[in-house]
Length: 224
Length: 224
DNA sequence: TGTACATCAGTGAACGCGCGTTCACTGATGTAC
DNA sequence: TGTACATCAGTGAACGCGCGTTCACTGATGTAC
Image (cartoon, each protein chain N blue to C red):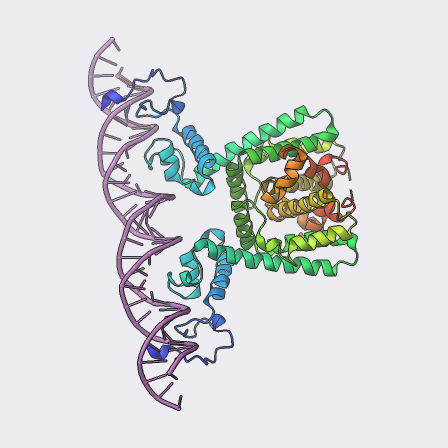
């Protein structure tokens, strides 16, 4: 039995949490906390949000159902961690999009497209990110920390010409942007739109067109 | 035992499905199918979407867990029926809003506000309406029948000046309208917006302002 | 109008399942001397 | 450098629960004669 356990200086890479699937695992995992979160994401990707149970996550990580309790208070804390990672990556994508945008007037649009693209690439993850936010009826913490999507959008709005001391205009523009992006993100996959998507040469073009049509994200109304 | 059963000509109103809670029920229910749907809605209202199990619905309707199977193939068919009723009512609200709108250029805005108001008044119902739509990645059937929201919006778009034979513009405007409405509907409850809502004198005013800010729903861009 | 009988719409007990969580435990690790 | 021991991070069995669904059943209804 001890034969299957490896010494601390195992040869399976520097991060034992991501050892090769078949490789025997050490009794102490190394970084189970992180491994659980990424197991959760794998389940989301493969089986969707409804399959994301605590037991399934433990199973996927190759660990007993009780093990997660050494790292998370309960199931919801684990799910929050998964969602949090999602928001961080979404923030990263938004940041990149903003960097890419040549001028301030197209930045909001680029951000919107990046946002929706992320949601469409990780639909199950996005779903639980939002479900947890809706459950507490608040923006996710991860969306508002420094460098997060929220902050990025705030800067982009200012750069697009909204007076930053006009609190109401700032807030309304933020809200309008988020609502639009969320709406498009959740509905872009609907079959009804397949024809239009094809006619436009892909989903990316379709998303752009919807944003352009909505107006706000193109920047021209941002300074209303 | 037979004493608690009533003859067919019971005195508890014409619709036996909605008899007074305490009143003894006949063995044959009368309209269990409908009673189950409204029991489902009561559960949604009271306990939220996660509590909506088939057993809970049967319990709420005062019937054994097996009874629903005489009316619905399985759980999901029952949930579809609940969602369907939701879409019908939403369509009704949209229709009313359109009637109320004095001129074609404000109709889309009015529709948007009505849509969001419905979602906000029945958040749990709206949640499962949408969840089921997302599960099959398509607009709900109930949204597209005659007199439904979809049809109403279509007409409103035409009246607002979009050329009905320009399929792409029609479709894009439809999509933009739905995405926006959905986004606002799901996010309007977030705590972050409480301050702004209060400053504006209520949620209704807030919703209107967001739509105005987004642009599309005010009609001025509908004829792009 | 009364009776026999098929059909309808319920009952309630049971099935197997996967879930979240707890518990006493044990192997592995790291620190003090 | 070696040893004793506290602490950490796992195990695996068990708990009670509510779920969706099936089943043989039975009471109520409606129809044919």
